[in-house]
Amino acid sequence: MAGLQIFFALLIAHALFDYPLQGDFLSRNKNRHYKDENNNVKGLWIHCLTSHSILHAGSVWLITGSFIIGIMEFVLHWIIDFLKCEGITNFHTDQFLHVLCRILYVIILWKMS
Image 1 (tube, rainbow, N blue to C red):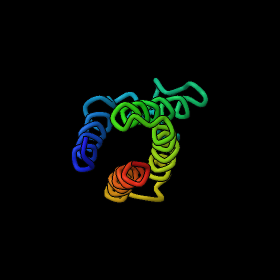
Image 2 (image 1 turned 180 degrees about the vertical axis):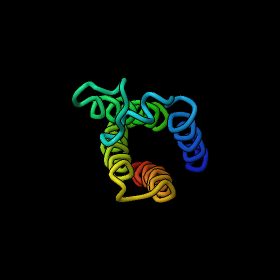
Image 3 (image 1 turned 45 degrees about the horizontal axis):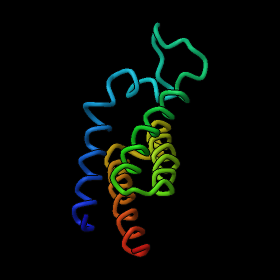
Image 4 (image 1 turned 30 degrees about the vertical axis):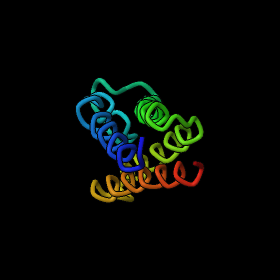
């Protein structure tokens, strides 16, 4: 697959896992500041943010064929979403950083080939 095709596939996977496939449960509960009557499990946010990041990492691994890049995605996605949940970044910065990561992955793949 060419670099542009990989980039587009990574963007599609990101859009799927960040919007329709994330669901309300993960979307709300990955934020440690979210509180409601159903969110009383201590540390639930860590599990939700980690699960969400693992789904993204898996899609990156499958698309790129690189386990290392998949692990990079897990770590970077976790940090980027944590920063958004903490109010350090906003929605637009969050999405920009996720797209920037995908550009980085394509560059890494290109350098490795």
